[in-house]
Length: 168
Image (cartoon, rainbow, N blue to C red; front, side, top):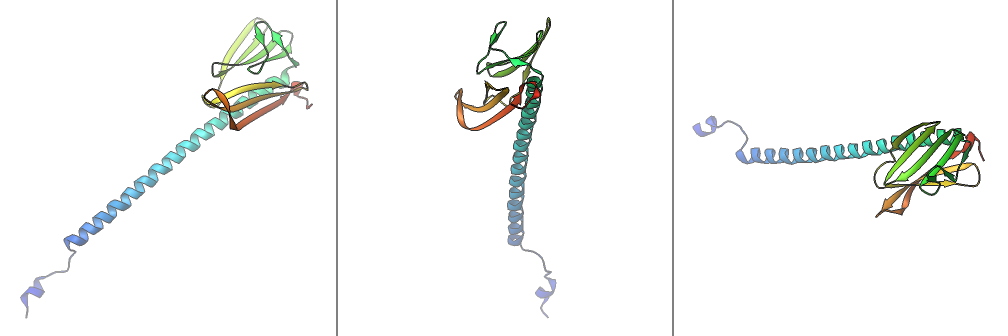
C-alpha cells in the first residue's frame, strides 16, 4: 500500500483559491458600479421631480392671479409692462406685479397700502422668464432654457391663463 496516497486529503489548491477570490473581487466591483449608477439616476430623477413640482406651483399661482385679475395694465406706479414685467389689476386698490429681475421671478402683491413680495422658483439659474399679454384676454408666462444669458432653442414651457378665468 502506498502511504502517500492515503495521507493526501482532497482540498483546493492555492491557484484555485486565488481565482475564486479574483472572481469575487470583479463581481464586487461590478455590483459597486451598478449601485453607484442607480444612486446617480435616483438623484437626477429626484431633481427633475422637484423642478416639476416647482413649475406646477408656479403655474397654479400664476393662473390663480390671472383668473382673479380684471385686466392687464401697461403702466402702474413705477412699473411698466414688457417681456419681463406683467401688471395685473384685480380691483382699483389691488394689484399683482410679476417681474423677472436679475435671474429671479418676483411676485409683488399690493392690497390697499400693504405690499407683499416673494420670489417664486422657476427651476434653476439656466431658466429665463418672458410674459406675453395678447390683445385677447389670454396671458402667457414662458419659461425658456438660457445659454450665455440668451434664450436657447429647445425646451420651452408656456403657462397660459385667461383674465377673469374666462376663455377668450
